[in-house]
Image 1 (tube, helix red, strand yellow):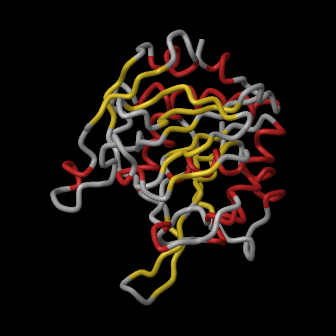
Image 2 (tube, one colour; image 1 turned 180 degrees about the vertical axis):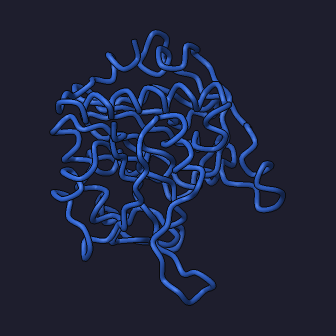
Length: 260
C-alpha cells in the first residue's frame, strides 16, 4: 500500500553561490519517512511553479520547515528593517496561503522554526525581528561554531500548559529542546494558542484554536535525531497518524484526538 504523501516545503538557495536550487534538509525527509511513516516530497515553494490548490490535492499533509530567510514583515503590517534579515517572498506566497487553506479544510501540517513563525503570521500574528535584543531574553540563535551535533545540542527547557495539547502529546509538561532561531512571536494571531514557552518567556509551541485538523507547530528543530529523541519522536508520530487519517478518507484528525 502506498504511503501517504507529506509535502516538505523547500527552500531556495544558490548551490556553490551560483546555481539556484529548491531543496530540503535530509533530516526532514528522514523524520517524515522513518518516524511519521509517510512519503516525503520536497515542494518547490514558488508560486510560479506550484499552486496551493494543486498541493492540497497532491499531498495529504505538509511539513513547514525551517529556513534562513525570514517572513517579510509586510505580511504582518510592519516595515522592513535591516534587523529583519533576508527574505523569501516566493515561499511567503505559497506557505502562508497554504496554512490558511489547511486550517480551513482540516488538512494536517506540522510547523518547525520558520514554519512555526509562518503559522503565526498566516493566522494574523506578528514577529519580533531579533529575540536576543529583548530585555530578559536569552540568545536563541544557532551557535556560530562547532560541529553539527553541537549546533543542534539540546539547550533549554520548554514548559507546556498543564493538561494541554503538547503536554498530552509529549507525556511531559517540561522538555529539553535545541534552539536555532533569531525571530519569534511578538503577538499571537487571534486563534493561535501558545501552549509552550521557554524559561525566558519566548513562545515555543502553538496550535490553532478550534481548527478541525492537526495544526501543531514548534519553534525548535525536532527533525534533528527525530527517531531517537523522546521529544521529537512523539511529535512526528502523532503528525503521521493525522496524515494517514486524511489520506484514508479525508478525515480531519483534530489535534486533541491525535494527542490521545
